Image 1: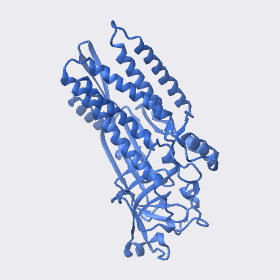
Image 2: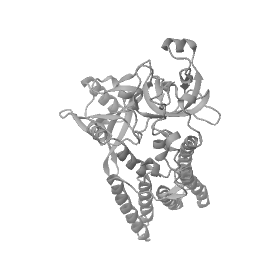
Image 3: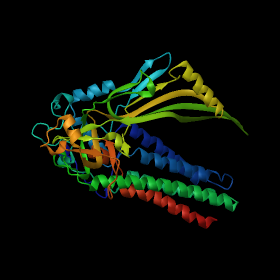
Image 4: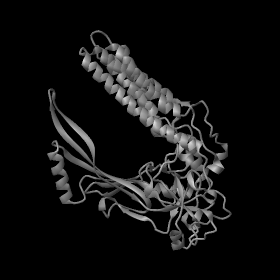
Length: 452
């Protein structure tokens, strides 16, 4: 299984979809690319608008192909998860996931994702095997968890994959599209505005790619410490979430007893409204739709990160950066949870631009007991009062320290991620792919100045 996986993906790796949704996306976006090429090459002086239309379809098609292309190790990790996890457990998870109709009359539904890429890839200890007497003690003989980087190693994504190739074609098409539009403008000021918008998009994309690449390189380059031998200072830890003496959270989303999630240690929920309005145009009318975030909330509590060699207390609510991955559960409804809230939401939306509320959505993200977790945080000494209050064994090093996430280290950014190092990096793109594409778009925007 995991022993057969080559974690060093190399310079180039051909990665194809492994689910029917991915192959469907490949077919649809490939058709869009082909149709765009046919439209662009059939451009004539009588129909000059066909070239930009064709380039737009080509760029959208290639960006879509890039989006549905899996990460370097994603397909192999998916297969390993299916082989490693007990089929009975997978079947139980399948029963608990999917769409559920909560109230047919009110059109209330809830959905639990059928696939969780941030979940364990290799089997992890269940709650029945956790040490209830001493949560800081090692499991069994103190061997690290099967998915710990000490045992499986650190994956490195391929420098270039189909994602990068499709993204390259998409970016070039986008540059050509911008060039054709800007060259057709007659007012110089409008050309500068178009170039400025293009440059702004590329800079935002570049900054986002650079930040993601920096976090990726931090994961790859930083050695993962074992809990039993963790030292004071900034360290990288990987393990399983278990309850601390403070207990766990029972999250009631938006104060609604219908939307409850137990055994949480960190959460973030959002309440959104789907709104629409009818706008008059020269050709008639058109309908506009948008999702608007109305309310949100987040929080957390201390938990124990256990990597098999021992447990360490983590103050999850102190972290400056968190990434909970895919959402845990989503609730939808055609109406608000009460007549009063429905009336107020419709009244406010109508007053702010004539919008009508047509749907409501609550989405919950977070970390629960048993989840895998990746932490880059600052390890500090615990106070004697805190140690004595828990009645801890002072001869164990990991009971004398705890992890905080409110202060970055030198060249190290504190972060709390759901998932192990293997699952987080396995789905990532390479640094070259994340930075080169927006850089190319920025260079293209600069070159557009020649058209002014």
